[in-house]
Amino acid sequence: MLQSIVYDKVKTSLQILDQLLLPHTTKFIDINSVEDAYQAIKTMQVRGAPAIAIVGCLGLVVDVKNKQFSDVTSLQSYIVERLDYLVSARPTAVNMKRAAEDIKTNFMEWKGNPLDSVKTRLIALIENMLEKDISDNKAIGKYGAQSLIDLNPGVDKLNILTHCNTGSLATAGYGTALGVIRSLHSLDKIGTAFCTETRPYNQGARLTAYELVYEKIPAKLICDNAVSVLLKTQNIHGIVVGADRVAANGDTANKIGTYQIAVAAKHHKVPFFVAAPWTSIDMNIPNGDSIVIEQRPSQEMTHVAGIHVAASGIDCWNPAFDVTPAELISGIITETGTFQPDQLTIHKLKS
Image 1: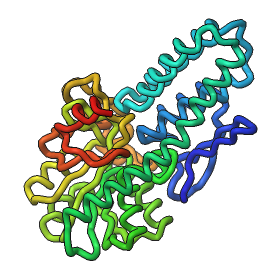
Image 2 (image 1 turned 135 degrees about the vertical axis):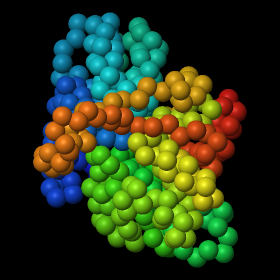
Image 3 (image 1 turned 180 degrees about the vertical axis):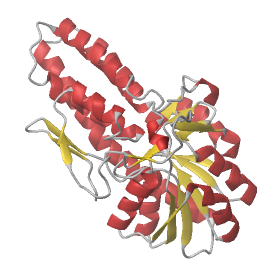
Image 4 (image 1 turned 30 degrees about the horizontal axis):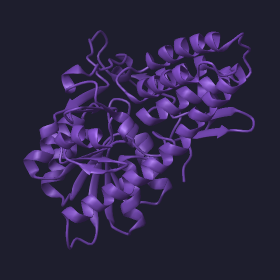
């Protein structure tokens, strides 16, 4: 399985695959501090909501491992400040924020323990995030594959469309939406996996296509503006995308272009699923109107591979994400099952 985050527990070292160089160059870079992690997240050397949280938190581990603190209070103060800094790198993705809140809560429970003990517990808590993300992704893949199979009885091979990158490059491993495709492939149920190019950053063309070729999954790349005609002329059995944040009502923020795919899916009566771990579901916000949408630099639109392709002087509007309303979503696939968007709150209260 493709691995984009390499963490060594013994050496407490962290390396990430520089996704800005893919698919032409495979290069791992060292993350030696919180600042390194922040810059890697901000510049999108690592991206994908789960991977952002994991790299941010593991960057904190390598940062504090050899630092000296006078007491638990000074350690806690440093951790809180650094976590808030990491959260600010890309505010739309909720996973980093959720991880930060979890670490802060644990610190309240660790008060009164020796400094070395607290440091050990902090490191163990964060290291467990890496392992849990992989197991959660495999569960998402299993539930998602079964949901799509159940919706298409008697169909031997399923044609699935996905948008942006949600695989091993966006998570600790396996993937969310791409994990569903990976699971279908393992069951010999994939006809063709279609992936969009995902302008303006081309995560689909550079990264999803890279993973599909790497895993030898039958696949085709399409232009972003070919989605509607694809759904009209090809037999697409389902669409699966990831999520950077899901509101309590099921409204979902994901890579820009997701919303228009969901609208086209509704028109063509193609099931549209969101695949996301519970860490991406934010019960603190009622709907998608409360989700902060990150604005990216104009240069991502005006330049391709460093070459200026747009008219000089043109202004740009470059939101990194859009919000798909819950009523356009057929189901949200989590590590505990597939749910209707309006079932999220009920299930969360039961769990």
